[in-house]
Length: 509
Image 1 (tube, one colour):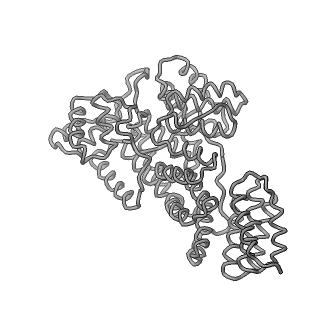
Image 2: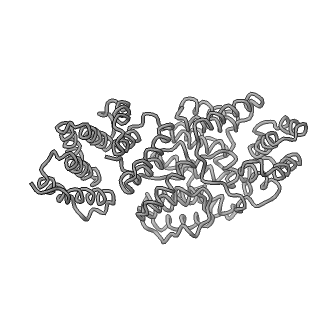
Image 3: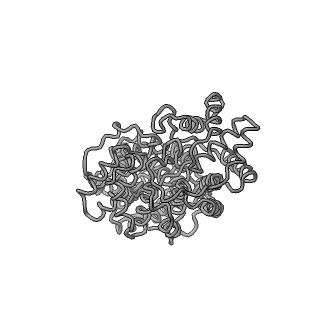
């Protein structure tokens, strides 16, 4: 049986994209910020300027443009010259670089003339090629922290935790007050289960005292850790000051709203969430969508908001509204946009397997998900289940051996793996073992409070027993009839109908 996509708690932890795409989204704009003093330079960019003057090439223009953004400096004449060069060579340049160049020469960073896309299919060869390029840049400019962050992201996509953390720590050492680096570090350490480490760094930093983007992240981190942030009051002051544009405050409003809602203050939460929607980004809009499904606060029409890279909110909205084709499409785009995360892969695979009856679609995305999460039992279970359904039994058996001891896994994952093992046994003709494994999963499912895990093992067993003709059809019908019709769990409804349709073709004993 497939692992269910569950509506787990969501917080406004920063999304993490490449530096160029982040800049294109306007999340590096420092307008409206009042610095306590002029921040020290991240690194000396004079070498970038000198090389650009000597070599008028796209690669050197891109290096100077990115370095200028990373430094938070005013745009120099050389940077503007590089930007104009890029725009003239637009047919040879990637869209994010063109967008950065447009921002430098004065186009509105929030217009949509060249919006970044949800993400590209990242093959392993592309990731490894990026790693080689970034290493070369660091050999030439070892004090530039941005390639370290980009390397960290590449290694996260490959599931190489140690290298990802090592590069992020190097970036933090080189530039501990850079918004892009701090927010990327927050996502990285939260992703790898070390939020306490980065929270201790962020709450002591200087940037958290004046940057609403970082205050928002600190508040969400504290909430994730079960703590109350000491910066909530300051965040509210920022919101009420009217000194910041709505886009700079959108994540701050939604992060404080989440804290207020968890404390039972629905009126305050509603007001803050509505403020976050004045100029939302993809993260704040997804938070409102998630909250509004858990605790309805107001009408929300996603079509009203022209937000770039908005696949997560659209995926959640489609899933909550039972629009399964849309849910699969947007969750797949969400996985492209955040290729190191597991939740969109779980959503896409669950929808493909349990609701669209297209396990081959699940196989493709699950294989990509296992690159970032090698050995993950949830993804392996769903992949094994899908492989068996498309009659690739030997591949499924080989993959199942990678799971190892399931006794230490969460109860629901254990149930899924036990049931999937029962499926393999049935398809191999070992009906007795298959039945025993399914009955074990069924008994474990009865102890949960989740009807999905209570009834899906029963229906899977009935389906396999019908297909193998190993059980009496009338007895199976009695078992299936016990599954309630009013559960409002679409995957249970779909599987029950499939089983009843199979039973209708079985002649009475």
